Length: 500
Image 1 (cartoon, rainbow, N blue to C red):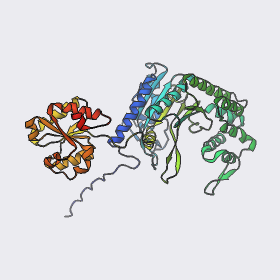
Image 2: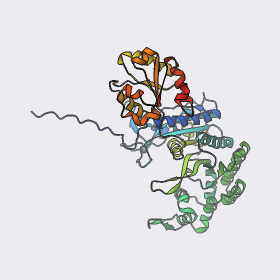
Image 3: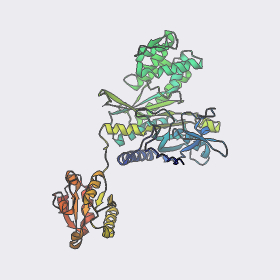
């Protein structure tokens, strides 16, 4: 009789496009989000934690495909009512559903912020994951440009509070209505051709003015030598687009004047320029000048989604890429006005504007500038010299925790003292507390400064060897919480001076 095949063990691996986050990374992210949340709260925004799962109808990306009805998201079909559900792919679509569902109970304008993971069923790549964090703030229910100006000011405050100083960032503002006005002045009525022009405009930062002009016309050779077909516009038709993309000047007044020229007689375009003028005036009144926020028509990403002003936060300092070449860090946040999203649920236009911060990119920027550390300080470790006296050690750790100190008792096998020290080294513990039977009888404890003794820890196997090392002090047991609290709170730590 053949032996039954053993069930193979599952491979211990992270699914493709996902990753695990450990202590220091999680702590750094939580600390940054707490700082941003404090700014949002100060501006009068309320927290919202919506469901991680939405119906595909609510997400608005349903595709009539039996096998894969919702491309781009992780979706599944409910067995009882055959509805398709999906993990949220951003935090804005759930906001639209929440507002439509609870609008009679919410104060309008509704001002909310939300932070959490989102999921996208897309091909992963370097630095591109299928699960990542977003950090949003939105105002729903007002068409006032004061809401858009406030979002930009708040974003500037957020960047500065987490450690991006003025001069290292710029928030750039454009307006979809201005671009619509440019398209009207070009005389384009075909939707497909307008879409082609939009895609060409989106390449401005890569190919520049001449490249855009070529792509709007007959086409151009790209860097690889391949020929890219153009939109087929006459040179005079392309002029308004070039005027629009190159209208930024040294001050907001001149930029706005250039934009009025670019939109020509378009009423839509003129309305967009008026909105930009209003935002610029409101920001000036609040003290946010061009050192932080500028009108910049070259901001074109996302214009197909937004209905009015659009915002982008760009970090301007240089970093080194994987090949050692200097480059600017780039965008870490984007947003704008989207007046049509809630309408999908209510049938009525509901104005809304907001911003989304790319949490992982902002954290990467802070790490690149050395403004957040790569490790997190571990707990104070209470070593175990006698397993029968666990109650004494638990009393010590309770004292320290009661004083607000992060601390733990070693819960592994205490037989080999060296293992406890190796554990403390891996956890980056700042201090170890030692109380053997002799110390217990004398009413004292030994505190070891592990930052001074890390290199010795791997070679020490006994308490006697440990006590011979210089980086430790003996104090009265009743001074434990006092001495440790002072040591943890000191900027220039000297355990011996603190212990007296």
